[in-house]
Length: 299
Ligand code: FPP
Ligand code: MG
Image 1 (cartoon, rainbow, N blue to C red):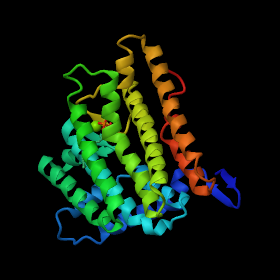
Image 2 (cartoon, helix red, strand yellow):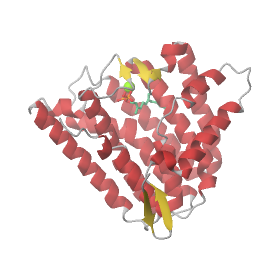
Image 3 (cartoon, helix red, strand yellow):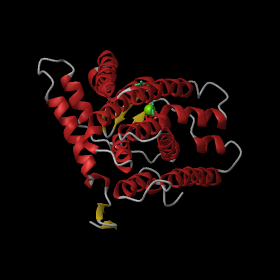
């Protein structure tokens, strides 16, 4: 495995090798293991938490803390809160768009039924609130506003097939349903380190741009039918679909790819305004890992 030299630090070039990734997975496993065996939620949480997942949002939170010279161990509960609300949103999303396969395994409602899935989402949101609440006003505000935006974005998404859905609706939708949690993860990480409002806003903007680029790539792969680990019965309108109303398929795809590069460029420019360090390099690596690295080599 190739590593990279950053001043005195040598950083891993695979997200799965990051120390923060290991810490997040350990903390999640611990959370499930500590639950009372008699709780009917335990097997649902085990299903959700052991299904893999890239842990991108909690990683962004912890690494943002580190870039701002904060102590990463103090950010773990907040990182867990972010991962749990993200998991809840996927469970509810699968209920709403008929998701039957998630991360290569049956979705929660497919395996345990609609009522159990709904309640599992409720449980995860509530647990996430207990984890984030000790972090104080700014972090809790960010967390709450991300949740509200995600629900608003999803409302726009589920109407997308029935209404005239233009570019501005698409970007409003993905900004709210996806980018808002990336943005809040980065901002919360910065707040935990005690950084200034201005720095937190720049982290917020970084997360937002990564989140937009990520959702465009996810939608492009869905358009190209290249997603093997998830399957839904209902579709959302995607960016290449909108472009292909006026362009040929290949041009629509190329234009979509250009948009991905544009948002990744914004994200990287924001990151480069922070001091060079191993954590910043890891954030850059994650940015590519979930966007440009996933783009199809041939259309
Ligand atoms: C995936 O979209 C879904 C989201 C990014 C957000 C879903 C949000 C909600 C259901 C609101 C939940 C709110 C709270 C507070 C938990 P997609 O269907 O395009 O992606 P997919 O291919 O991964 O399913
Ligand atoms: Mg879905």
